[in-house]
Image (cartoon, rainbow, N blue to C red; front, side):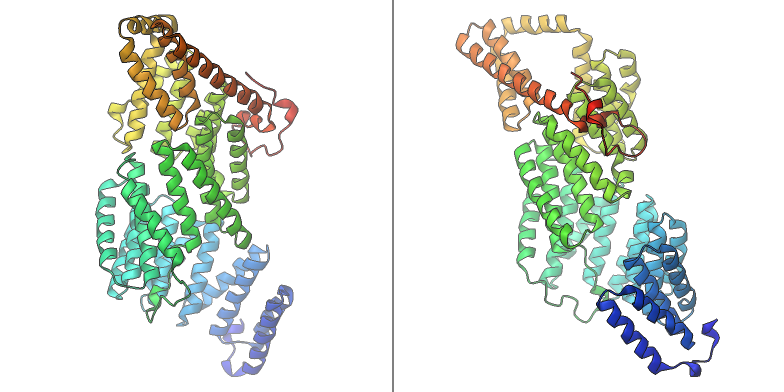
Length: 568
């Protein structure tokens, strides 16, 4: 091997000339010649440190500028093999980091972990690299849902950063740990971690850019913590603070050097442009849960526009994740507002986003099939809705999502008159046995499904008669319930509830002899009904409507319009 030659045989001047030539080719994007120059270095019989560095440079070039991943992998493996026994920290730790990232991307986390573990263990004298490797290893464990291992690494990172006198990086580790605890639904530990981090942020007097960045991270977690629990009102103060913090951070000059003399502080949680999109996203999530559909649409439009602008500069995978989450929320908004035509087009758009980042089909496949199930329900295609929900359940790795799917599947069974199938699901959606979920919203929804069952069990004619008889005796109380329901549905706006409420109101006014209001109720009912029927017809004529038949295999991106006739 070249590494065995004596360093005295090495021509330093020739090496320097080759490096300069390689760099000149790289700057004019002549990668082929750049690679040739670097490969020529091996003919000079370089010492191990330079041989390792050259393999690393070649591996990075091949990864970023070519599709020859196999050759890139060979160079990176050589770089790590040679450098792991040397004291050249930048080369050996970068080689470990890049090689592990490549293994992970190729679905070989089992190869990435040992490399990162070894690099982590020998990097304690290089604080920056030690922290970076801890973050990277924790990320790989988290992606495999090994949350205990990931949290332990982040906890060790917080202790290490604290011993290195870095309050900033200590907080980054703590908040990252809080994020994983939140994903893992460990409410007690989340409260403890966020409480500690919140106090540290308030007391810290570091650079403004770093402090505001940490504050945004903390407040995003706090808002998500409340929303996960369905505590929509409790979230308002934190959300307001978050919106103020993001305004502050966008006005700060980030070109000032926030690192100072401590190299361990070179980490950045998110670029401020990505933070802005994230704040839009959590605002949309809150608006959805609070029933402000217009507001949700407004912030979704702003966020999607910002994402498109950022993607032109750098198509970072995180932007695609934000984009699909926004689309998932806006689709639900459209369905509530009775806009099925746009909803199915946006579901198709979400599939295209996943196509650009194939991993998203793994992480969001269940959500997409859930949305298709909701859409199929809205166009009265109950068999397709059932198939979509069953597909979503197979792919779901979230307890809360599975509960949501099962509740909608239960409604499908009720609407199809399949009482036995409904009863088979009852145990899974019993609100009294939902200890596995911390969400008040899901528990409330479960009670609603139970109420719906009793309505259906009474049979339509009998239920209608019971309502009418009670109205005759107590029309004022009935009006007092239906009128505010109609007003609230108008505020959201929820067209389906408006249709239902207007139907009840016209009957109530007819029974009480109020002809003027009965006529207005009829007009509203006819208007809502016509609008929904028109949208139903338009949506079922779209080629995208055929997505409701997709339950396995790759997404049918080229749908045949003629095969997607309306099903009304």
